[in-house]
Image 1 (cartoon, rainbow, N blue to C red):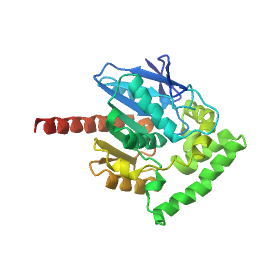
Image 2: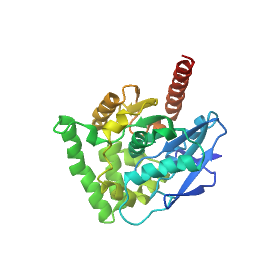
Image 3: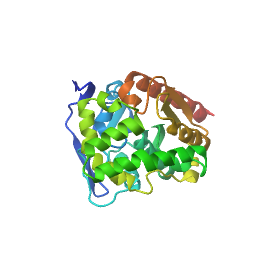
Length: 296
């Protein structure tokens, strides 16, 4: 089922493919649990980002992981893409595989896509769990927090985009990891396979950076979402994510929050046991609350 590769658990199951919205997506569906769970990776990544937590989830769920369009084994269309396409792909994947409504967990850019799905297609969701979405648009214009995010956009993220445009995908990936996502020295500590995935998917990250909707969401539509929500963060993550989560908690008052001690932007990779425990605990509480409500 799995082997150790560069310090991470990597699945050996053959990939399957599905055609949605004119693009060929690679996916894996494992586990015989009665509840469907879809995991959405962030920028630069692939479905393998979730390998460390899938074994702990499959006894309880039908777990679907996939490569988002433009990433790894999924098709990379030509032309400018959009997060709106990612949202449509996720909805179509859930419906095509017959797993709607599903729980969806998203990390980083995958969390943005998950929240945008909650705003536009709540009918395909049982509930959502999101970790540190870079949704700068929810911050009040002119606030110190928005200004800090603007500094990152115009500084290291602009340099990341310049390096990709110049063909320096490895240098761009290293800068993104060390200066934006995980902190200094993190690139050198990543497993070799994860570094290769970052470099391979660099062109799609540039495409994301050029999408004006990549950091935005319809706040009014999101506020109408009534399903269970868990907002998570790491206490070692860059501080620019915290005000975003605070604002999301205001838009989604039903949301619970969890902070992973000692973790950063990818707790499913660095702290898989804690991640699985908190996912299971939250879903159990949500199911119990729904059962009580249904009996009233």
